[in-house]
Image (cartoon, rainbow, N blue to C red; front, side, top):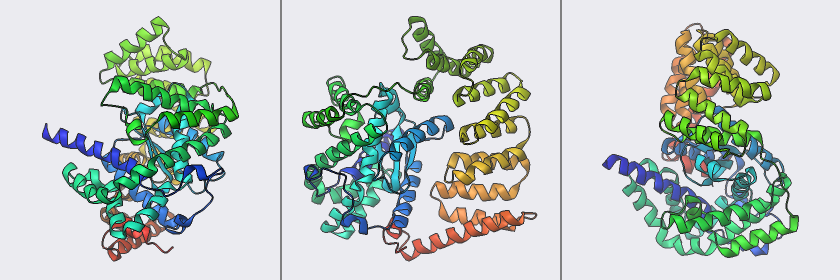
Length: 502
């Protein structure tokens, strides 16, 4: 019980500390801007390369502390929505990385290097896709307006050691005991808390303003931002002292809602139908929210019987997933067949149908349909992962390794993908790839030295193809250099990133 309580306290601490990254003082009045900020002295604090390294360190810390969801289809949807928003923002330079946190929390956060996390609870709380897009556009604006780097600049006015303590506590605090994390942050709060209070509203209002512009540029309803904020604000009467995390980390006031409404009126209402992917993803997350399969089946049976749904297709998809969860594969296949007949190119339905074919012993059909889907939609990486999974199930792990390595080349840094490659390589007896991709998984999870040792093992394996050996050597050299840099900076990857001259 004490361990569970400690874990819960640590996670709550990280939620607050992640938000703290965005609410430390900016030192800039929001009403002084009529256009997005195109540059300021904070730009000189970190190079793009250094900011990218800081972002990777941030993401490794998040993975160690929070349940990052590696479901390919759900992740792909959030990425596609985020990329659509970024494409319309002329100030959005650099890379953005969108990911899901598998917790029923109504919140989102942005970290250094363009890493933006969205909790699964936010997707379920958003009544329209535009509401979800509004929150994501707000977080994108925190990045494009460089609120985090401005906070570094402002904290430097206090002292560099204080800034270092703040960043270390925020990123690493939840990986140690809650008391240690609280003690670390307490040393910063005394000097900075009043300044944070003074400037939180300015940062949030600026993110709202720029976010609404991004929202409109992507064709979403500009009223969605104010509508979602107001609905959550009203809900506090029900939540009382347990308000949604979004309200605690993004303070919503009547003035802020009114300001968002005023800006939306300048553009006018732009009703946009929810995409089927949004509705299917919500149905999947709803099904995952039930711990027991029979509860999930009962939920979807009831909503279908009573007609309480936004989309019958999405609701029946959730029902089929629930039946699959309950191991009622034949019943699920009947639902899946009808859905796929109506929407033959929908990746979510293709994967579901193939999984059910595999469970029912129709492996030839599953492989044929997935191979065809991959050839028709080569950019749909979730289909490739599903195809590799099917190859594994039918005893073709070497082909699965090749398929997964193809994905890894265009999607580096995915711990779940590396784990799949390791699993397939073990079954294929390919020890070099076991070592190589176990190293990548370790590195993604923040274990640099063990990753180096596994790459060294991979190079010593017999029979490694020349091209693969060359790639392993290049990667090993890069990780060794990173390790040397950390040692030069006293073993602190964050300090090394912040002071990288390249």
